[in-house]
Length: 303
Picture 1 (tube, rainbow, N blue to C red):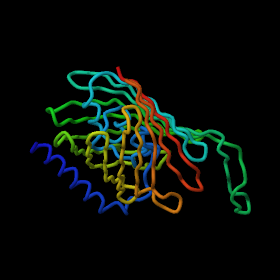
Picture 2 (cartoon, rainbow, N blue to C red; picture 1 turned 45 degrees about the vertical axis):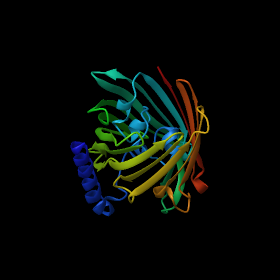
Picture 3 (cartoon, rainbow, N blue to C red; picture 1 turned 90 degrees about the vertical axis):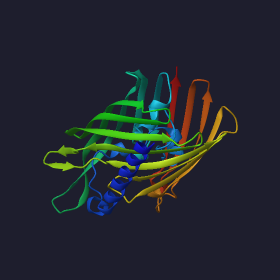
Picture 4 (cartoon, rainbow, N blue to C red; picture 1 turned 180 degrees about the vertical axis):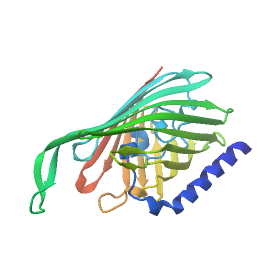
């Protein structure tokens, strides 16, 4: 318990120190597709991950997540993003060396984007054909329990981004810890997308490294969770979400995310879930005003 508290405070201290310098690096992140959240359950609950969930989708924000549930799992997510961009995320989890291992992939792409150039008179908007963009990451995860209440997890990730005929690749890592204070309360902290960044031609951009800390409370058929995250690009983001299960099969979810609150979006999220024995389906809805609505559908099977 003492070791867990010390680790949590160290991560919190780094979080606070890093937030002091956030304005100096705002807008410099590369591989922004890594910021698109995985798992419709978590998306519907405001993007909270730290202290609840044990699926391959929870690995997006909490590397220790898979240590909490035995057995095997396969999961897949499809997202309709803004402006015709789509995302696919998937993973497989299995017992391994006294803990749990998983592999995940994340792909985002769009084709037939119109090229624009400046003409001889400096006028912007002249069409010059089309191009495509694609982003890919593949990761290997490992998580293990320290004791009956505490788990830790790590991950290594390969990243590749391509714009038209120019590409860049690199590597990143994740680390996280989760502690169950009792049967109702849990806390967690993580650092994800730790790496050098991607270099396109002569320019290198930092990865969206995210420090996250949060807590959850679960009782009966009700769950509430909250996270605070700092990704070095935007201001500190506070997230809160709730889940209510009127029956064993159905889950109703809603959340709020301060980072998304703007003229384009009220910051609200919502979704539903359906569980049929070992099979789960989840849906999340996130509006983006004039940019359009985004929809996430994810499903998993455990065995």
